[in-house]
Image (cartoon, rainbow, N blue to C red; front, side, top):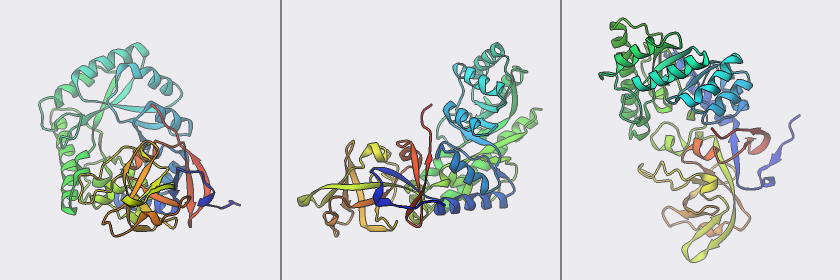
Length: 381
C-alpha cells in the first residue's frame, strides 16, 4: 500500500507532478492523433523518466521514442526502449556512443540536413561498421535548422545519403514546427499545423518524384499535434511537453493553467513590506531562467503562484528572481503577498516544463494533493 505524505513534509524547492493531470494530458494527445490516423513517437526530453514513460505508453498509440541527447538514448535503452530517433543533427564524434547502443540491440535513426554532414557521418559510420537509417531534417517555418522543403538542397542531400549506402540508409523526412510556440490564436495554431503537414508531405512528394523512396514523414510539436486537422501522409507525430504542459502552452491557448501537471513547491522565507513582496526559496535555479511568456499577452514572470490545493492564489506571480530567491508580487497591485507568512508553502507553475524539470533529479508524484511516490529522472548529455 502506498503511504501518502503531506506536501508540508518536503524540503523546498521540490518538483511536484500531478499524476491525474498528466494522465489526462497523455490521453488527450493519444486520442487526437489516433483519430487522425497516425501514431505518436513521444519525445522524452521533457520528462526524462522511465516511470512517466510507462504512463505515456499506457495512454496508447505510441511507437518508439524521440531523444535529444545520448544520455536519454542510453537511459531509455536500459529501460527497455529499442526504437529510438535521435532528433538533433548528428556529428561524427557521437557515433561511437551510437555504435555501442546498436551493438546492444538498439535501432537508432539519425537526422541530417546537409551534404557535408552526410559525407562526414558516412565516413565515421564506415569506420565503425555502422549502417544507420537517416531522416532529412526540414525547416518548415524558419525556426531553426533544416532544409527548406521546396529548396535546392533537398534532393542533393538525399542523394548524398543514398550514395553512402550501406553505411547510411535513407528513410524519409522529419521536422519540428517550432514557430507554433508563438501563435496568438486558435486560427494560428491550426494554420501552423496545416503548414507543418503540407510542407512535409510536399518535400516527401518531391523526393518521390525524383525516384527516391520515402518511408517516413515525421512531424512534431505539441501545439501542432493537438491542433492538426489533417495528418494524411504523416507516419508519426513527435511531441513531448504535452505530458506536463506549461505556461507557454497555456499562453498560446493549447491548454488551460488548470491542466498543467508540473509545479515547484516553494517556501516563503521573507518579505519586503514596503514593496509588497513575499520572497521564496525558489529562484531561477529552481524555476530556470526561461522567460517564454515575456512576449505573450500575459507575462507570467518566472511562474504563476498557486496555493497547496493547486488553485491560483489571487493574481500572485513570481515577478523576478535571483539565483536562490523568488519574488512574489501581485500583478494588479490589489493583493498583498506579504500576507503569506514565513514558512508558508506555495506551488509555482513553470513557464517551460522542460527547462524547470531539468533543475531536479526527481518528481514528487501527487494525487489528491498528497505525495504518493518519488520518481527519479535523469539529466545531462
